[in-house]
Image 1 (cartoon, rainbow, N blue to C red):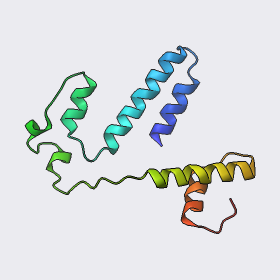
Image 2: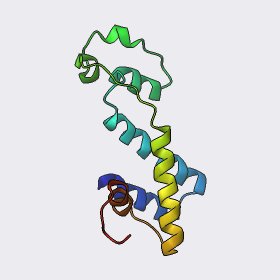
Image 3: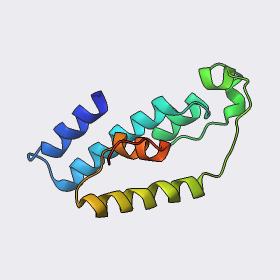
Length: 115
């Protein structure tokens, strides 16, 4: 919710240039990315923001992500992403209107709601 509010405030701010608004939106997305990243070393992530290079091996398990010893599973979700985009196109063309993320998720799950 905070992200959405910040994005809206940034988009509505007419006191700055479009370039500045885009930079501010990018910063919001970087913060969200930091919060959602459960794999990469936190110190690496933070120091990259300041254009510094940090070897995650030097963290030695001092950040939450490096302490977590669960194996990381890499999966190619290209086909699933294509299916979502195709479904989005089909629904929006049929309805000739916007489709919410919730509606799209329900349709992907096979809900019988009329979308």
